[in-house]
Length: 322
Image 1 (cartoon, rainbow, N blue to C red):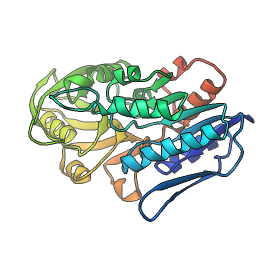
Image 2: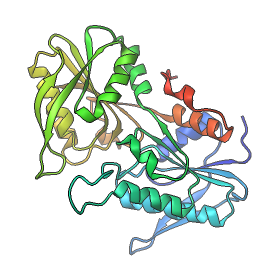
Image 3: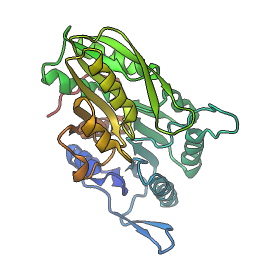
């Protein structure tokens, strides 16, 4: 199908995903270049006419977070000055989402600051996947389409036959219960919750307290929105194994996987970690325990539906991978 007035551009963070999305849509990626001056300043050049076009920019704000965010802002400014009809940012992973409230005195709400920056730059719409906190949608005064990774993860486990009473979906904390419940509905399983206490002195650390729910003799499937250093998910997996789980699988939408993450996963009780490709993973990160499935079909269908003014609600059901 031809979309003459639709353009999809990829910036630096996840060109592999952008290429898959463009291929699924049957279009070519827009021509642009991103350069850096010797002092680190970023320059973006758009190398084709976009006047009157509906432009989608695909860019996750993963590491290097600040560079990738600046690329978006600079690209949006260039598009606005070049008379794009609408500017739509496709941000599969929304960085700074963990800073969504004031947990202590004198803390910033950086996810709101990022929302302001995108809006002021000239973004007309944001398309994202599994925000760390759903209320971040309310930080924007522009439309936000918030897709879910759970149906894709559910499809993976359903194809493996991992459904029913012998399995239990586990949330690694109280904040992820809604996500776990949704996956459990797809897989027709019960749920359990890890009651943890986060360290107030160290970033990215937590202490497992106890497990709410019956996991003994069952295969556990942990689900989280993101895995950063993997400390939380690995502690949870080890606690489940110690509590009588026969096997532990884990899943997440955003594989941040920074610092000691890979080493933590290798040493943990996790048999397989299923992740989406909202964040690009280099080949050396795709260790035997990690399996990555693509979100390209979901993103492509969402872009088409937005462009054609059709509802996105059908995308919240299980999407069978081709």
